[in-house]
Image (tube, rainbow, N blue to C red; front, side, top):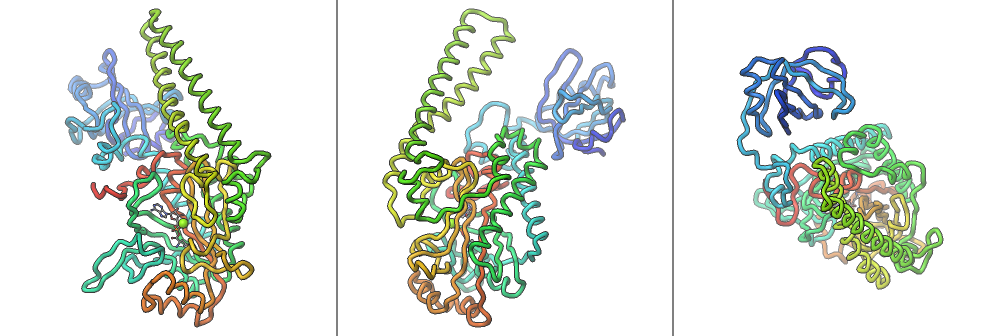
Amino acid sequence: MIQIKDFKNHEGQTIETQGWLTNKRSGKGLEFIILRDGSGFAQCIVDAESVPNDVFETAKRLSQESSIKLEGKVVKDEKQIGGYELHVTNLELIGTSVDYPITNKEHGIEFLMDKRHLWLRSKRQWAILKIRNRIIFAINNFFQKEGFVQTDSPIFTGNAAEGSTTLFSSKYYDQDAYLAQTGQLYGEAMAMAMGKIYTFGPTFRAEKSKTRRHLSEFWMIEPEMAFYNNDMNMDLIEKFLKYVVTDVLDNCKNELEILERDTTVFEALKAKPFPRLTYDKAVEIIKGEKEVNGKTSIQLLNEDLENVKAKIAENKKGIEEREKEIAGGVKKGKRNFLQAKIDQLKQEINKLEEAERNIPKWLESAKNFKYGNDFGGSDETVITRMFDTPVMVYNWPHEIKAFYMKRDADNPEMAKGVDVLAPEGYGEIVGGGERETNLELLISKIEEHKLPMSEFEWYLDLRKYGSVPHAGFGLGLERTVAWICGTQHIRETIPFPRYYGRLRP
Ligand code: 4AD
Ligand code: MG
């Protein structure tokens, strides 16, 4: 049995292959089947002249998502998806598929989410999951090459680490338990045993918000390094992100093309250092008090708004012209061509109009940003708009960061945290920092956050027995997949997403 991805090694040969029919059209005495088998997509041509009668009859009746076994000759054809097609000599039905619910017409997102177990078969979802797979592979490669040990942290835990408001409670036999929001605290213990470690597991946050960035269950990569300060931490984050992005660019060209992902931002990112801004400087930029490349955020957003408006007008004109042409009477082929362009322009307008509504809101909230607050989604969008690579923001007001973050000795109001914000509106993909090693400060922080001290005895031990400076970070896998794939919403980046309001399938 030959997989579609290996057709290239069998040019001119008669082979067997198997998969699912994802699409089909009929010509005179010909059936054109688009086959998918998980490894790729290929056109398979069934010619009435080349197969027995009953086989051609079977081919004619095949419906979407029927599973089939095929025999045929592999022929090179660069115009076809994958570059090879199969000239079928025999075909066998494995499993029928009656009234497959997901057709080529537009479906609403809730419908598709209800049918997620089937939706995963579509080309776009396939491409996203392939890229997710490659990202996971690249992450493991990177850390293994850098001498990190992969260790696993527990999912049932007795304590909160990232704030008590987003805890999922559970039962552990007769005790109360929580699902892990992070593996970090355990990661710190493991770093004291192994030097440089990373955990890579599911994490849980009860986020009662329906944003395009939040899941209730997501996967996080959390490296933790003994003898690291936050500068070393930032160096590592930058090297790591560049490695992952480059690896995906090199190995997922086809998938990125299917997703129509504009990869210019990734090309730029490979060569440039990521800007590192203190929280204070980032706030000045957001509020429009500081220029970047000769412009303030307010100027840039106003320009964006003008450009969006001009583009909408241009698209509307383009639609009008084509509609006039159609009304004047054209041949069917030309009409379809014009109509397809009109539909495309309309879709673009929808996106542009969303931007037209959003930009004034971003402008308002940027101007009114209050020093000391955490960044909201729109603040992140504004700051990343100023650069074409991810941006690192460090030294945050300690009040808005987790209890374990190291206070800056020179500036006690600040904690040595770092967030990495991805461009194009994707926002925070990494959160991390240096960890507090001062036992008294740590205890006072646990009290301030009203966390039960008894649950942290073991964690405090790490500061009592050979405490060393250490740092680490957490990368959200799905946010990274969303950014690299350019998906509108994080829910498409994990096979079976869990977010507020969605537990099934
Ligand atoms: O910034 P966070 O909360 O940091 C931590 O959990 C630290 N303990 C990590 C560490 O230093 N070891 O989360 C880290 C990252 C975020 O930057 C984001 O990418 C992702 O996890 N994340 C989420 N992704 C999807 N849905 C959510 N609800 C997420 N919350 C955080
Ligand atoms: Mg964070």
